[in-house]
Amino acid sequence: MLNFYTDTKNLAHLVGEFVALSLGIDTTVLHKHFSRQTIGMNYYPTCPQPDLAFGLSSHSDFGSITLLMQDAEGLQVKKGDEWVNVKVVPNSFIVLIGDQLEVHLSPLEYVLFMHTHLPILDRYSINLKLVPIYCACVLL
Image (cartoon, rainbow, N blue to C red; front, top):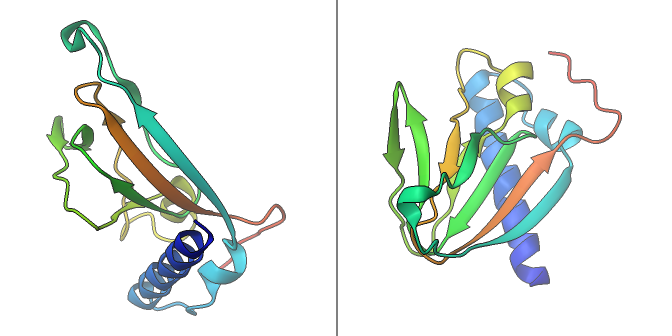
């Protein structure tokens, strides 16, 4: 588990470097100010009557970048006025932009997606979020 965490954390920081490069800013900005990580493991059980359930309420993620690994469908993102199913690709990560990356670094270039989880199948997910250090003040 520790190797998975370390490798995923390094991947998240690499994604952050690419985001910084695309914005024309110092590649160490995200690593410096978003150096804390949280990791979560979730189990979403099948609902016996999914037509009567709402699933998880729609939300965006806090922090800067979330890497999400899932094993079954059930994740949806909002695109315009529609909810779109996210296809599961084995052994891959979904990259979600968090609130603080959109607000602080790139309100026009990177837009977060509201997303939700539907109670249609037994589903596991693992996520790693890069979040700001407690005293971060990101100025560009």
